[in-house]
Length: 256
Image (cartoon, rainbow, N blue to C red; front, side, top):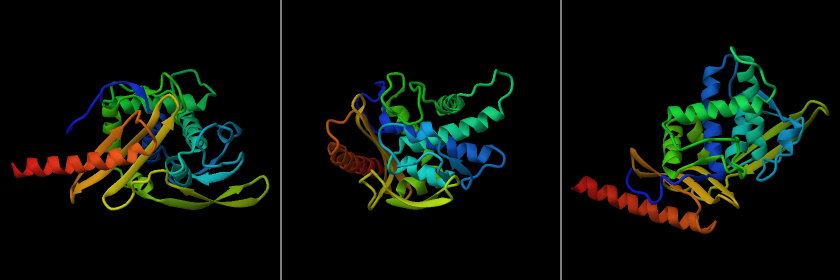
């Protein structure tokens, strides 16, 4: 770690929560039998009416896991987050042994999110929903989010998703045998040059948040995490300033 201010302070982290949602889904794809990024997910009514930022998913529509991961990370769709948590929570429920089964499938996904947080030594983190909507018990720290982001950036599929400026796909509704083409734009404005993307977030209680990855040298990157920024636009200017500082700091360290 190069530097930080109040990086151990526990705060709400808004949609930076979705970084862990994406991480867990990508891990479960490898672990659960018969599951892949091409597996279909049907959007439930509860998912479709989830408030806040949206991927504009309709009840009954079907998309692949890969589609919904883009709906999760680019437009920051809370509906996509709930759909993924519900789908993979159901799969986890079906493989659960030794405890009383629950129909609250998202609960199983949340357990997995917190289990992975412990494995990543995110000791000041507790997740209580898959999307980051305002929740006083869904908290983390800048240091923990940096740990998570660093782990995610080691995953090729994660890097591919978060660096995409846009994504277009077709969703299918079996009930009406109809297709709908959707396009999502990335809310992250820092996707040019050496910026490798990751995630934005904002709620009234968390404030504007940002976790980004910047390539300092050919084989060296830094993760920048900012929570409770003063304004939405200040996130971008502060990130650029911090990246320039990190680049100079590393240059001086290498020189010395």
